[in-house]
Structures are given as structure tokens and as C-alpha cells.
Image 1 (cartoon, rainbow, N blue to C red):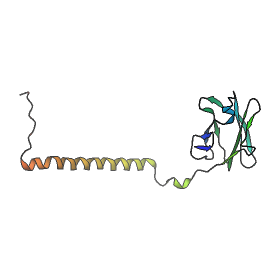
Image 2: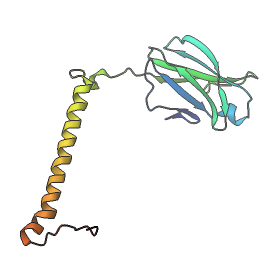
Image 3: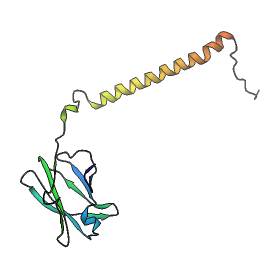
Image 4: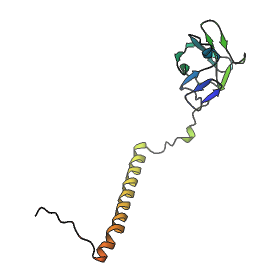
Length: 154
């Protein structure tokens, strides 16, 4: 997912308490900086501030960031020479979403559901095979054109 120009994440949504991989191909990468650090924090007050050296690749600088239980993910970038990319002094700030538990069904054990699906699948295969045999061989039996193959090894 591209959140802004030259900043990419490996996920569509930033979710609390997960690890996200960030790729940066912005100004500092284009200026061929040797080392780039991501300076990041969480929430309105920039809690848990950290600096993490990003790995330089052909696709840009990359790092994996563990997201916390906060409302926003705030970050900017700096290189080893003291140059900053902080979105014109506004920083990069994106909301974090919580996991939606409403979509998770917990009233049935998982093994019961897969067993039932497996049984249903097997029965559908058996019915399809029976219908195929009826369509293929019943007309031959009724017309008398049904002959068994005789082997030549007698």
C-alpha cells in the first residue's frame, strides 16, 4: 500500500499490535544517502519514540516496525548527515486500526467445520460421478451397444 509518494507498506491497513514493513524511496534515497534512519513514535504525544536504521536495498530503504496499541503511527526520516524528510515539518502521521473481532466466528470448533466441509465435498464428488455414469452408460445398455473389452491374452 502506498500511503504517500515514495512510502510503501506491506499491508493495506495499519493494525495495532502487528509488525509492518515500511519501504522508503523518497528524497533521502534519491539523494543517494548511505544510511537512513526512521524516527517514529505513537499517539498524539509521540509516545515510545525510537530511531531505527533502515536496510538499504535496490528498492529503497526498508525496516520492520512493531506497531503498538495507539491511535496513530507518526514517523519521519533522517540520514547520517543530519538531513531530514519530515513531510515539510508536518511529519508522516497515519491512523492505526484495531482488529475487528466481529468478523470472527467462535461458536464452532474449527475441526468440526472442516470435517463437515470435507463430507459435503466428498458427497458432491460421489453424486457427480454417479450422474456421469448414468449419462454415459445407461443409453448404451438400453440400446444393446454396450460391449466389454476383451483382452487378447487368451
